[in-house]
Length: 281
Image (cartoon, rainbow, N blue to C red; front, side, top):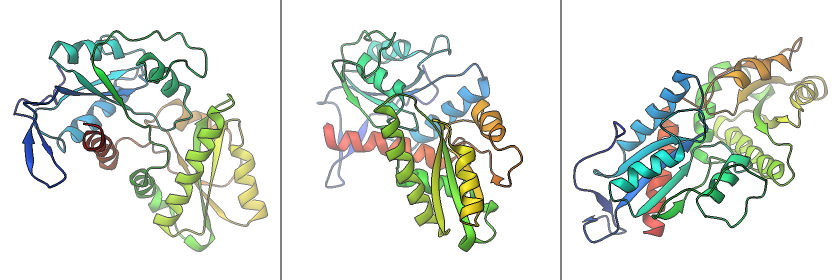
């Protein structure tokens, strides 16, 4: 059992702000799903964010964090099995991924039966479960995340009137997925600009690779100082190597900080769960 599973009677807020127990309602559970990593600190950062989110949720809510791959004993089917063994009949699934353009979000939705066929071929088979699935959304352009990104990079800002924030994400080589990546990260970069008050915002992707071209454009064509913020859940190869290696010899300011750790990501998780509870239960 995860350390954030609570024991007190479960309560939810109704539209009239009164409290009602769930004794007469189906047993609710939450499964937060992330990609997974061999890096124990990466896994711990996700666990910590979910633990913090649980503190903002109703007492007694059963929660598990699972991973798409790598983390032995904590894969998605493991999490489903643990929750259903505790009587969960209605399962809120939170895909903790930065973009709806991720092929992983698509294959996970398929494996949960949320969609009949995946848009891209996958080795992931249908999960074994009986619970009704309430599938959430990935991060995309959520305003809370825009606040968080600016909070992580604002110390790099020196002259907002002559600066551009370049948000850099993974992207995709697959048609349809790329377009969703572009819509989400473009909108998110604009939200960060609104929050920060800096002159300009833009985005770049590793797939297709246009990071270096975007930095050169804003420096040479627009005369701006470039600040770069990575749009990745946790620090690792992409934040420490893939992005800097593409910018050798260029002038830029780079935080190198991934989304985790930050309390606002925990708030995003808890709000996702509460919104689904209010709208679908």
